[in-house]
Amino acid sequence: MFQTPVPLTTDKPIGQGRVALVLEYDGAAYHGWQFQKSGVPSVETELTRAVSKVADEPVELVCAGRTDAGVHASYQVVHFETRALRNLRSWVMGINTALPANIAVHWAGDAPEPFHARFSAVYRRYRYVIFNGPVRPALLPSQVSWTFRPLDAGLMHEAAQMLTGDHDFSAFRAAGCQSRSPRRFVEFIRIDRRGDFVVMDVQANAFLHHMVRNFAGALMAVGQGKYPPPWIGEVLAGQDRRLAGVTAPPGGLYLVDVGYPDHFGIPSALCGPTFVRPWFDDAANGPVTPSWIHQKQRTLS
Image 1: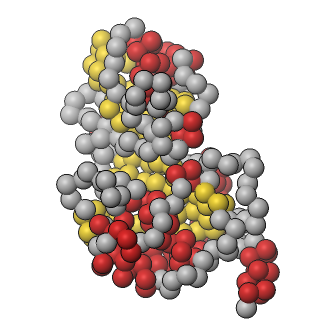
Image 2: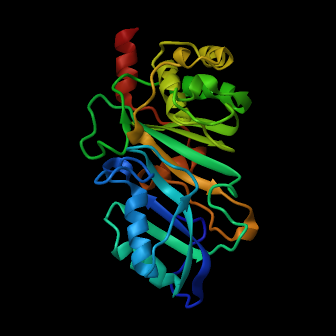
Image 3: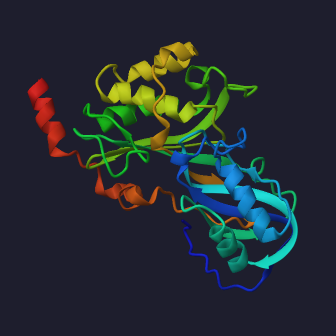
């Protein structure tokens, strides 16, 4: 979860003001982060209930990024105001005891104003995980996207570089996106493969609605050979959502990091999801393409 482990043994009191939490969740069972109609499950509903129980008072949460239905987070940051005073272990373990198994808080700390979980963030980072195998995965059905068509991660990475920098991303925003400006700055975007897993890793100052999933859908089309890499640049320049193809499914998407200025003291993320971390945080090993793809490519040639 964190680059430097955070022990839960400190007795330093936390609270009586603004408190920040770092958490992770499996979004498959939820209709997104945000409160929904009565009876519709959301991450915010569950976490608000649990934090309010530990604080012994109603709280309102503010998150770094509102994830959509079915989208996961290995590193989400929230803040809330409270009159309660608890130590780190009491906040973390108490909240987790009141949460369902698919949501877990990993850290709590004082975050006095002007810290704001959303507006103090200087970047967000997402990973999109694709299982590229001939048979759909039964053990990770809601945690990865799946395609049986062979993906060329090298071509996908080449195409993705056209998306870096400051651009108008109208071609990659949802039709209902409410952001006032379509301009965003993409710091980096990488595509890498380890065995049957292909992962897109992208960081930007902020993202438009469905922007990462639309990146993934378009880049998968390149990886399948439907379009050459320069096509991505043409789509970007066209500023027309209809040019970019399908939106990739939500199950493969993870919010993996949110960056803040150091003086706020929010612990740095060790990017997830956990099941791909051993491979994709060690780029020196180089991509490994599974043999079934080579065999299928020979069959098609």
